Amino acid sequence: MSTGNSQHVSDQVREAAAWVAGRARSVRIEEGRIEAYAAALPQPAPHLPDPETELTDGDREARAAFVICLDAINFGSGWWPTIRKRPGRSGYFTVAAGLTDRFRGPGPWTAAELRQLDAAAIAVVLGQDPTHRLMADFATALRDVGAHVEDDHGGSFAAVLDSAAGSAPALADLLAGWRAFADVSIYEEREIPFFKRAQIAAADAARAGLGAELRDLDRLTGFADNLVPHVLRVDGVLRLDPALSARIDAGELLVHGAPEEVELRAAAVQSIELLAGARAAAGQPLIPAEIDAALWTRGGAPRYKARPRPRSRNTAY
Picture 1 (cartoon, one colour):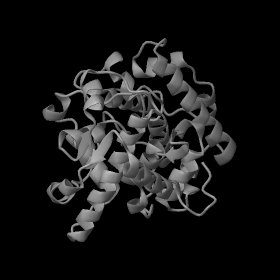
Picture 2 (cartoon, rainbow, N blue to C red):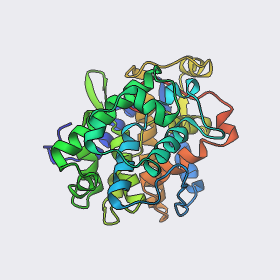
Picture 3 (spheres, helix red, strand yellow):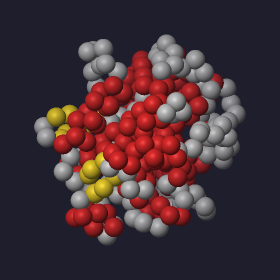
Picture 4 (cartoon, rainbow, N blue to C red):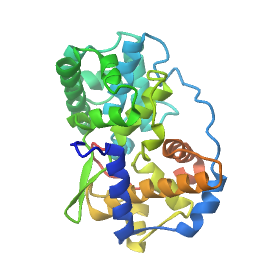
């Protein structure tokens, strides 16, 4: 996506999400609940990496490759009920654990190897059926990563991070231009960028210490997926049209790009912006990425797991 107008992708996401939220028909933000909800959000705890699902060893090149590859395939939530999960692991952490084992055992893929990756190869790494639709989608994304890293960055994953010159939004901009990180919907004939995975890759790189100098993390938006709007719905920050609520509660898959699916994602991003504003006004700032992480983590609690979450099968989240 072009950022030649001097706006970063994150700025475009923020503006578009507010526009959608302001005219949404199926999803409403309960703004009267924002201040109290923001005040109750926890302060971010220090990140304690899980060595089973994060590459905590290896050199910077290997760890950069891990973050980029994992976030390139950080989608498939609509398919999670249909994959083989590791004991006690969610769909995301099953994928993360498989990738960690590959990087820690045989080692990271080179960019050239990624260009040749097929569904059968990624299925072996993740312990999945090679005919599962996700395996082909994952392989397509990783082949695109390999092509960009090899052709544009001399085969170096660390060079991808370095090309952002210390700017988290600039790293998101770069990744947003790759097909592997594509994430734009159409709403009322307007392009609505979300770029969940391009932005979270920038945040993950900083969290992993791969770009300790990465600045302007506060300019990233929330990472629009299906779990954060679910948490906000259960907690009463988002109110859904009764018909949409009934469809979600019945386990009906939402169509990616349908108005109500775009509204859910946009309302979550805009809610996080409002929550960040309320925290700043109270003198206890939290940036959107920190709020997103708190809500995503909260979504693993039994209260949220007990109720069906919105699901859509796509390559965005």
